[in-house]
Length: 142
Image 1 (spheres, rainbow, N blue to C red):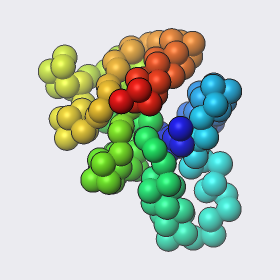
Image 2 (image 1 turned 180 degrees about the horizontal axis):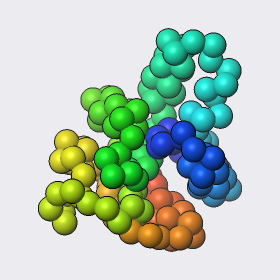
Image 3 (image 1 turned 45 degrees about the vertical axis):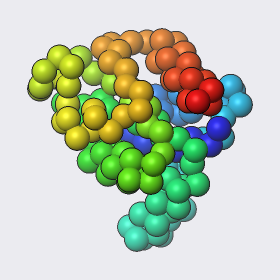
């Protein structure tokens, strides 16, 4: 399955975490577009934007990391675009902070656009990777 991996990528910790999860998805046979690996090649914000749009269109599904007190705005845009394109969206949140109801720990426009959504407060990478791989397998069976 071709996966667009959406998530925050602005700290060393975020980029490292994203790369580890991407490696697990690739090892399981998925093709993964991870924007942080492409951004250095884009010479302008416009090229970065267009490259990301092209790859959401290319993907079979989007995996979105919804961590942060308020999930990353770029990730939110990618989720909205993928939703408008009819792409399945798997949302993962390992952050234990929540602002809404327990059933909607972040903006309902995001939680309601998910095909599959998992709240995994403080989960380790093994739990996250297994959850994402199981979610992708269930999408492939549909």
